[in-house]
Image (cartoon, rainbow, N blue to C red; front, side, top):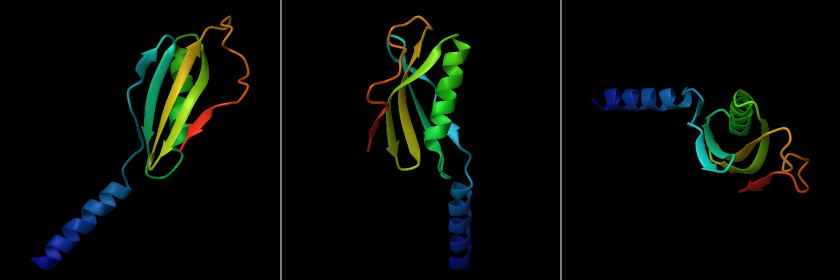
Length: 101
């Protein structure tokens, strides 16, 4: 019985290690502002979130502008704007994206 429990626990741990990356639904977070989270146990959570946000803004016919990124253990939270081409806020950021640790 003890061996069975050990094998079962190892299987559960291995399944967790092989889980697929996932992205949360994009949530409204203010005017033209949205929030998304990406989860990945193999790194590159930030890339997943940024790519999804960029694609989302493109689907609206707007441009992606990052506001704030937060890197946490195995997940990345991103607040971003989707702005029209003529929006005055769509310019090169002075400070760049704010990364919260």
